[in-house]
Structures are given as C-alpha cells and as structure tokens.
Length: 242
Image (cartoon, rainbow, N blue to C red; front, side, top):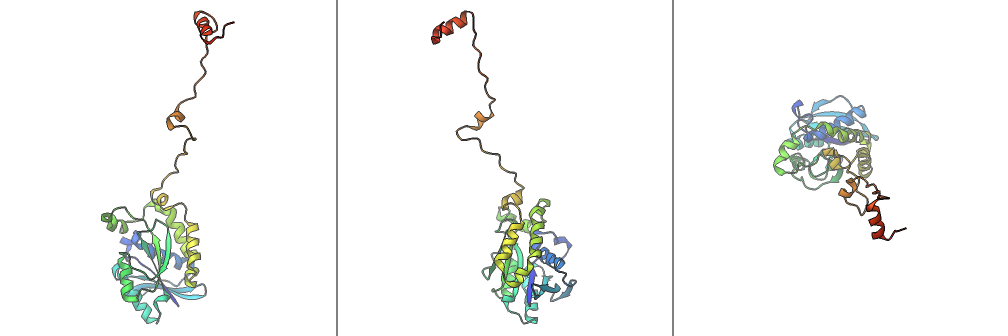
C-alpha cells in the first residue's frame, strides 16, 4: 500500500492558491481513477483506490499547511508503513511554472509543510515538487504562494494536472523518470512564457544590416537628364561624350 499526499490549506478561501497545487493534483488523480468518495480520517480528507495494481490512499491534510506532517504521520503509523511508501506532492518556488522534479529525502527548502513532514514522518519519502515560479523578491513570497493562480496559468496548469492524473500509476510503481518525462511533454513552452505569456521574439535582421537600414524604404534610381546644359556638363565630367 502507498500513501499519496497532496499538501495545501483547507477551505474554499485557499482552493485556487498556488500553495494548494498539491491538493489540486490529488483531486485530479481521484477523479481520473475513480477513487472512493472523499471521507474524513486522520485529520484529513482521504480517498481509496488502485493505481498500477497497487492499493493507494490519497490524503489531503486538513491541519493547515504548517502541520501537514501530523496528519500524514498518523496515517502512516495506522497502516504500519515506512517513509518510502509515501509520496508527497507540493508547490516549489524554485522551479519554473509547470516544471516537475522528484527526489527522495533532502532538506525542506524553506517549505513549512515539508518541514512538518520531515518532523513527523522522517525524511526518506518521495517528494514531487511542482513548480509555481518565484515572484522575484523574497518580500513578495508570502502573497505569491497564498495568491490564486492567474487565468493565464491555465495554459500550463490544466495540462499538467491532466498529466499527473494520467500517469499516476507510474508514481505508484516508482517509475519517477517516466513520470517526469510525461509531465514535461504535456506542458507547452518554458517557464518564462508560461508565467508571463511572453510573445515570440521578432526575427533578427539579416546579417550585416542594421535595424535602421532595414526600416528604410528601397531607394529608386535617379534618372539623369538626357539633354540641355546639365546633360552636357555631366557627359563632360564622366567622359561619356558622344
């Protein structure tokens, strides 16, 4: 048996927060694989089902993010599981939006939910870090993670959640590389274009020509006079006399 935990904060107020992308991910898994209805246990919402022939308990701690480990630890001890039987999905500031990385163990990286998991579960569980990007200033981080995803984020968020749900059996089997590859293929563009909606860059001018020269209209050849005093002077000057 495995536990797949998604981290977030309970209640409609937080439902679309970037900090709740872990909740969104396990919700998508439950829908796609026809898990049982959500029930309350272990100070969490739980749903049971099968992934890749493995029995799986999905769990969304209702203890608020900073105490997530209390709930997951209680479920782990009830089922007599080891940390290696647990997968945790959560938001990661230091990854570009839509990027996914998986590792076992390591530090909390400033994430209070992971710090709580480390304290109550141990460190040797698998961590699925879901990139939400960084606001660029440490002072803005609190409002960033507790802010809702923007409408434009659906460009990468919706296909990413679909990919997580479609390939959740790989998580249950421990095939982390294939899971990450599937997620990467599902999400369009790079982190900057996903967050900023950046347009394609204008094509560079041909080599050897400046932007200014490119902008000038083509010059028309000047027609020289064929008769009169000016024509005679030009013929004499350039040696084109008859």
